[in-house]
Amino acid sequence: MRKKLFTVIALLLCSLFIFTACGGRGLTLEDYNRLYIGMSHSDAMAIIRPYATRTSEVGSGDLRTVLYTVDGSGSTGANAIVTFQGSPLRLVSRSQLGLR
Image (tube, rainbow, N blue to C red; front, side):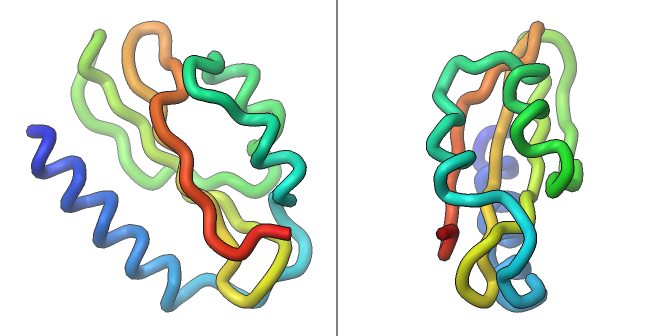
């Protein structure tokens, strides 16, 4: 299950680098830095909601995992990936590329 999740995340990252539009209006590095591991889903969504797209949702209960891709402000292809897990959902991972 975990291997499958990491494979999905890797494929999504690759596709984001290829298909994401030029940086402009989107999540800023400053807002990205406000996200922290353990943050509640609702608090994190207050920051990323305008730019986020739910990409994947698997499992249920404590094994529920929800992944969002987030359009970024910055260089071409700027984006972030934010992953939540559990019940209630908590931020378990975040990564970014090119945010300013």
